[in-house]
Amino acid sequence: MIAKFNILRSALFIGALFLVSSHVFSQNEIELLPGSETLEYDEKTGVHRLIGNVSFIYQGNKMFCDSAHYFEKQRAVRAYGNVHINKRDTLNLFCDSLYYNGKTRKAKLWGNVRVRDNEFKLTTDTLDYDAKKGQAHYHYGGRVESILTQEILTSRIGYFHPNSKNFFFSKDVVYDRPGLHMETDTLQYIYSQKKVFFYGPTDIKTDNSTMYCESGWYNTTTGQGTLRQNAWISKEKDYIAADTLIYHPEEGYSIGKGNVYYKDSTQNLEFNGDYAYSSDTLNYSFLTGNAYATKYMKDDTMYVFADTLFMEKIDNSNVMKAYRNARIFSTKVQCVADSITFDESQEIIILNTQPIVWAKTAELKGELITIHLSDTLIHQVNILEKASIVMEVQKDTLYNQIAGKNIVAKFRDNDLYRADVSGNAVTIFYPEEEIKTDSTFTKKRQGMNRLYASDLRIDLDSNEISGITYLEEPDGAFYPMDQIKKDEQFISGFSWKEALRPKRSLLLK
Image (cartoon, rainbow, N blue to C red; front, top):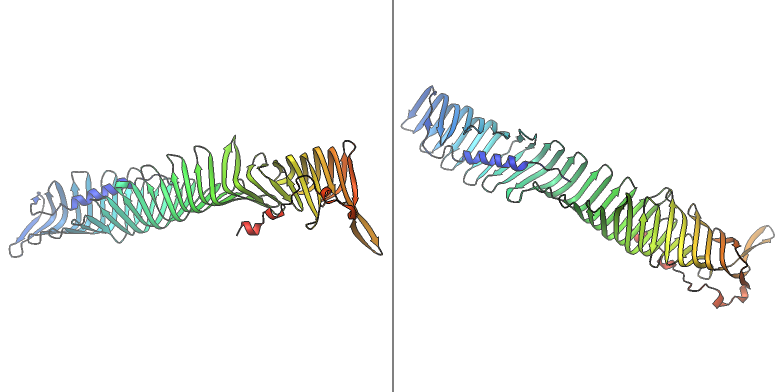
């Protein structure tokens, strides 16, 4: 999610600098080095004045400048021109002028302030330090740069707390290193936790991703991180957004909480839910809480709803599983079942436990249903065990019905046009007769056909049975409309579940 960056080491470097500055002029003992051109002392004011190539040592720290004033009573030092402080040849500080008050223990550095050791350097225009509070800050822009790792951090304001090792950067904070760029309003580093916290709008870019949040944190040791408030991560092929995104790279998992949205552009697939978990090591993820997936197909959009949605990678194939109260909605086909499995590469949808499929006015039911897609269009539905197809031909009254042990339903452009029934095939249908009256044609149902056969093929047109092919002689009867017996009007176990049919307006409130 976020590449590691070494802000820890830069923060410790700055802390070391100001621990030095809290001692440099805190006592009256100064060892003057040879080279100063003029040394003056005013007994009335107690002011020492050093002019020209000034150099002296205090507690092992060397200081150089063009001129300096040392005020005994105030225990204060002013240094001017080419100020340079050297600590044991490892830490160097440069500025145009410096003031340090030994009583208040406050220091101020002006003009081209530069601090450098073997690894880092700090550049700013003005630097203030309060030794009592253990706090240093700049307010007019600063830059921290790593000599070894090519890290650069710039901000308008920076606060340093060497004692607690907490550091703050605010206003136009920009962090750069190879492979990582971050911009934020405020950044805080807490050494004890090894965490960087950011507040306000934050943009993060790596070699393969772009991220955004409005608050969050990042662990510089483990690489763990949390992005909050309008958080999102965008990669080349996918995009995820949530109220909160949590990333654990060492364990190989990530979590999304609240208003989770995920998009996989390679599969034209989107997910929405309240909670998401994804494991890179186990190659699976799940989504729960008002969960649904959106699949963009060739001529339609398919929505999959369930209490929980799973995504797995099995043999290089992405498989989506919907558990409990699973439903599918598209403009041409709708489904319900206790669980639904969608194999993207095989283009198969499997419905388990009380499955129902609706296509226009046809309702398909069985113990197990598999839907086969071709170029994202339904071309075949296999109904296994206690299979049936019911088609409403007159509202709440008449139904064309097909039943058998197994049924293979064929579709063309998502329209049912053929059904092959095997094992104890039963058909109940109401044939129409076209009647001409004067210059118009009307259709009238003559009666009900109830036929039995071992196996048969049924051809359909607009959900009306247009032809039946029997593999053996059928058995059955025809009943005129006024002689239909109620106990012969329906197949065994007949049900019409239109009330369960998914509707987009109710699912996507």
